[in-house]
Image 1 (cartoon, rainbow, N blue to C red):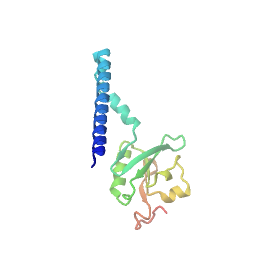
Image 2 (spheres, one colour; image 1 turned 45 degrees about the horizontal axis):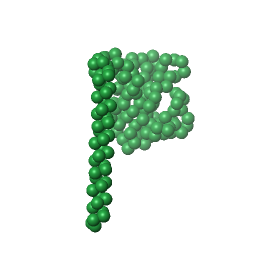
Image 3 (spheres, helix red, strand yellow; image 1 turned 180 degrees about the horizontal axis):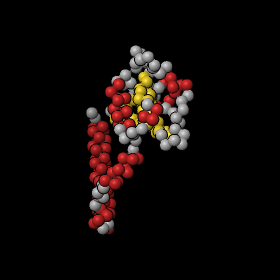
Image 4 (cartoon, rainbow, N blue to C red; image 1 turned 120 degrees about the vertical axis):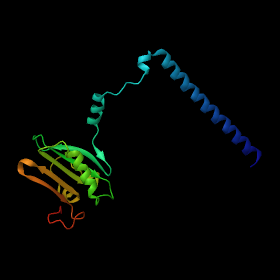
Length: 168
């Protein structure tokens, strides 16, 4: 490397290090000013209470290894909901993923629970009824309706071709 290149490299290193130290100094000064002007109780982080943790959990949609709840859609005005779940691409043949989602989403539902599964997010419907394309791309449909005596899971023919009534 020639002397001009070495000189430029040294100048660049000095400039970079002085910028880094000056930015660090400005950040430190700003945080020192904020800490000195704020009362002590404001600078301490707020402790998470069970109520705030529960509210945060209510706002986030459940998910698990290989699956994610995308939305819950009410069936008309019935108060019954359909859970629309996205399965991780490439893992749609793993029935334990479906089982995990069903268990988590239906654990607190005593009378009715419906969970529908897709691999492609853009096929997940905005409402409870499905278009033909959405139905064809659906991977599984789990339904529990105790009043009607229904407890079944239908699978896409690509996941369970031995099923007598697979989703076509």
